[in-house]
Image (cartoon, rainbow, N blue to C red; front, side, top):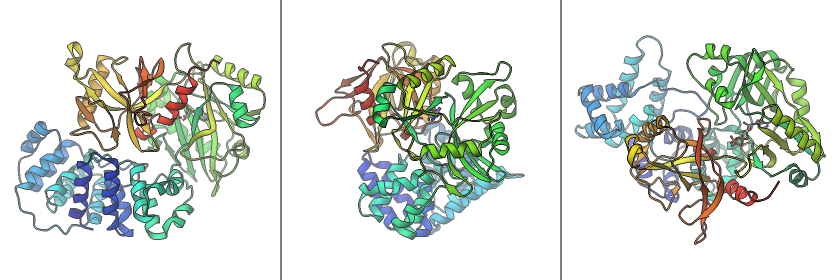
Length: 577
Ligand code: ATP
């Protein structure tokens, strides 16, 4: 497929405000894609040159991309930057300047573009800047104006197509299985492998049966299993049929630890590779994991080495940084509480019952100072769960994770196999809600200075793969945070309502659903102006007295609270416990 053909579809994707249209356009594109191309096409649609979990950095700043545009079209870099200042998008600048000249050929293929972009990412050492600029300029010289616009946005990470993983899976299903609703048949393999390119390639080459055989592998993150909410120990025991497996709930950040011989890789909650940030955990895995290969699920927490006390989340989160890693690792060393094991020495354990996995965990991870295996305990007693809960709170922890003892590790699933029991203060909801910022509304007075008055936020409707509105938020943000949000939002603002956003309210500015924030509210109420959980003429859900708690850098928009969870929280909130 030529790059020009490919980008003509990207152009259509960019223009639509309908999710179903997104799937149709993708399916038309996929009809024409060969097996050897599909993985590359899938990555490029998401503005990437590999799966999300591969830490491929293009290493091109806006200035460098501007230099490449200047070089390709024989104009001054300053002129390009001036244009950027005016329209705020180098893609549009490239489109405009390339429009003025004649291109010699449009035969450049998607594969050639993909390979060159990868070469740009892999260029390092002496003369890097020059080499990267020349490679990108070389590509720009061979594409048409629409191609130039989309090409430039890839190294900048500013593609604005709004195509999420579920949308791509829908389009795979529509193309190869005849119905987008059959996405579910691809989803389990996706949850085990986290690699859309691999799913696409396997589906094209080996069909659905091939996809179903794709298994867990070391070095490829498994989408984490997630927890539901229930009000108390009694309800949990009834739901589980008598017995529960109880573990402490640590409030740090989730880490998936992969060991392959001497090679250790670590992935975050949203499957980003974080190995370089966590050197002591790498050492811990090498020292304490007594198997050649293994995949572990853990929560990493900072502690004070002098008092041996755990630190609050705000401290732990300082470890999510790219620079000054060694220094911070000394100041705020981490421990990882290992609460599950999904793979050991060539064998996947995800279909084994939790109890059996805990036995393996005890054998494979030795107790020492960095990794702390947390196999938990089984009980049938409500009183015991309550005691453990109080114990957890006294220790400064968040509460408990109560799990069904015979459950498999269900990658990517949030169901009642795992239930979180959290502390709460009277009158407030027990849990916070993770919302996606969908747009902002101009403010008046002091706030106008920072460019925003309130944020329009939403939650995720997993069944429909849509973002639906749940609240406007103006409280809890400092002036500094407003400025940061404004700066971030400006980079991802879009002309019209994104295709996967369903809203009645119209903000001053729409932005690409990307930024996730944690919100605390007093109550979930019903409201006709919000679309979360709204069916026909019935009212949707809304938040009463919402305030921002923190940014959730570890979550993708699709990891926000779902409508299903919100509905359950609404039903549970007035039950006394
Ligand atoms: P979620 O991760 O479920 O989307 P969240 O990020 O808001 O929600 P919480 O409500 O705090 O997180 O609870 C779930 C998280 O608790 C897990 O994702 C994991 O990071 C953490 N956790 C701590 N201890 C455990 C444990 N023993 N078992 C499973 N998860 C645990």
